Length: 75
Image 1 (tube, helix red, strand yellow):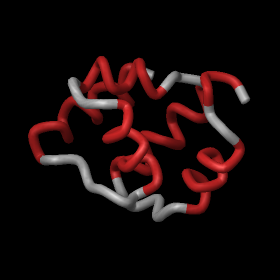
Image 2 (cartoon, rainbow, N blue to C red):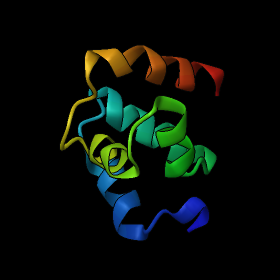
Image 3 (cartoon, rainbow, N blue to C red):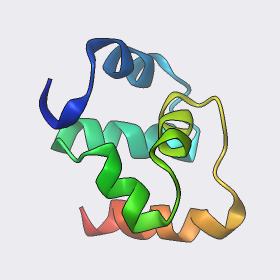
């Protein structure tokens, strides 16, 4: 898959709870082929943290929520 997304990660993102901000971010990035590393750099976290957000296993801290919303809105 493009942007380094494995089929498993893509499936995990699309089947996760879309009410979660991190999952919405994951769908946004998956649809636009935005690499996880680009998100991590823009928000100031590790790629592993972004992966956890994408699949809904962790929720972004409040300090990251605005950065995520800005990232999505610039889409």
